[in-house]
Every structure is written in structure tokens, then in C-alpha cells.
Length: 291
Image (tube, rainbow, N blue to C red; front, top):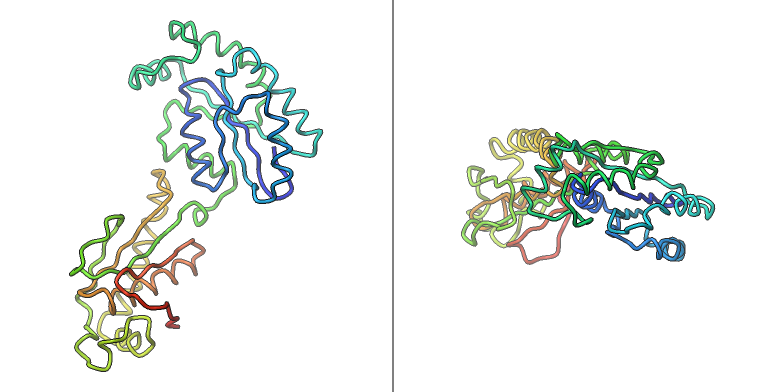
């Protein structure tokens, strides 16, 4: 279903085909996700969505755990269309041998609590009308999590810049590495403003310090190459299913060089359309703009 402000997806499919992982991916894309919403509450939930302007993009996971009432799903979706929504139904499937292997590896029981192949056969028969009504179908048999995410992002028409949330952190090595860092860059090779008395109590966010670092050997060249490296890596991480990237930039005290580089790296990434926030861990002052 889709309202005027956002998207409203129903995700279903064969048990073991990846509905839970798909819901997590929708969640990474900012969707409000509900797993196994009882069909009896379906209309009430739709009314709730209409009254809550803050709920824009929604994904509901519904599967064979609904029992016999699962057959009512196509009719309920049509009812939603009559209420002004545009239904979008995503069906997930996988090859039989893949499903058997997944159940064996996870030690999970099939929701129908029968011998696995018998349960899968019954489930396919029960879901056949729903599969035929689906707007989109994804076979996850040989997909990695990253490839599944890529397929869903294309389905949602989401660009790479929208997929990845980036945090750029400056820090001082004397206070230890940030535990959340995925990438760490050491910029202690840059000329240190700390040894200039007039800069000691300032930070890399102050224009005088920023000019000093920018005009020092290698600073501009390094910043460009570092930015290019990060821009090269982001699509690779997205392809592997990563939604959040934390980049830590360190210098000795975490107040001058690392702050300057982190601030400008974040700005460069935002200029390329990425959601890039910055946090200066070892600077306890109000943020100032450099450029």
C-alpha cells in the first residue's frame, strides 16, 4: 500500500525465503516495520496510518503463521485500495533444496510444525493465490544479504547516497580509538598547529587553524585522495549490505588536525549527496563553520 506521503509494502513468501532479513533491510531504509501483524487488525492498522502523519514508509511482514486466514490477504489488500492506498505486495521464494538447507542450518521448525517437505508443499499451495497477486517477486536462493538489499533498493528506487548513513568522528590517540569505528585514518603526519602558541587553545574548526593546516604540505592533496578513497569504498560496502559507516580520523590530541580533516571530509561527502554527520569526540566546544 502507498499513501500520498510514502510507501506501504506487504512482505510475504515461503518460510525460510528471507522475509525477516527483508524486513530488516526495509528498516535500514527508514521504514516502520511490523512483523506478523494479525490480519484481523489489518484494517485498523490502515486507519491508524491515516491518522498518523509521522508514519510515512511502512512495511508489514505477513506469512503462513496466520493459518487459514492467510487466504484473505488479497481481499484485504483490495479493501485497502478502496480506502485510497496503492497496495504493493512483495513475495519472497527460494528453491526447495535451499530452504531445506536453511532450516537445517538454523535448527528452526517450520511454522506448520510438520515434516519439512510436507510443510513446504502445503505452504506453497496455501500461498499460491497470494503469489499470483504479488506486484514483485524475489527469489533469494543464491543471493547474498548485500545482493538482496541491492534488489530491494532498486525496487524502492533508492540511490546509493540514500542507502548509506555515514558518521565521521575526529579523535585523539592519547584518549584511545573510538570503539564504533569501521575505518580509522591517522593524520599525525600533518603539520601540528599545537606547537604554535596562538593555536594551542583553538581547534581545527577555527578559521586560523584551518588555514594553517590547509596550507601545510600534503594537506589538500591528502584530503582529496582520502575523500576519493571513501567515495570508492561506499558502494562496495553498500553492495555487501552495510547501512552505516563510521569513519574515525585521529591525531595526537584530537583537537586540530583530525578535526579539520573530519570536518572537511564530512562536507565533501555531503556535497556528493551522502548523509554524513560529524562528531568531534575530544573537542568540548560548540561547533563552528570553517568554510
